[in-house]
Figure (cartoon, rainbow, N blue to C red):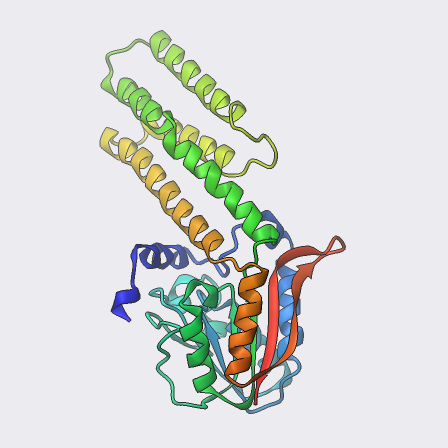
Length: 322
């Protein structure tokens, strides 16, 4: 398992420590999260009392928390587990959710390809935007091993034609544009001048005006002006750092700029990880074929879409182990 702890895994460590419940950093996902939750609640509603559940790539436990909600409403005694390759601690990191998340058995640093459970232990295995990040051929063998005969495997997968992948690819391109630009060095240079005390207020204001103009030009010169996301966010962040220059020690202020760039670089790595995990039609069909070879019967295999416009968020599969 240690061989699987990569640079990207450590980026995910930091991401989950921020308390996020899901990993799809798209406007559509945030606006429609209730509909996504309701989709999973309907799935959980199909299962009877006394079952064992495992969520793979659980992050901060979105799916297990929905399972707990369903179980509590029905007064069911479900045993619920969540594992992730990242170093997760949802009870600590998700504010205001301790009572709910305490009902889940979380384990971090667990690879989907090497699950630490007895064979045929679980009745239900779930995954949302997770197993496609792993060596999926090995992961589904493990899923088959730990799943009881008659058990269910339910998963939402990243697909190439989903808005999640499209938007995150756009965001990754925006991040690269900013990282390749002069703006961070420009901000650092301006702050150094302000903090040096060697320039008059008039000279400082002229430098600030030029800096703001540079920010505007940076946005205007981007290849696509539609649905900009990261560029305006980072512009606001750099302006806020500028405003803090009178309140903090000079070295701290300069470190804020460096940290902003590092955070953007880490975010881009997450976005590329997400886009790279997406499955096309051929890969999905191959996956379904491998699952059939492991003794799974296909119950559902369809695009996962929400809203009146049927916005595609991924691909949903539900299978039963024979």
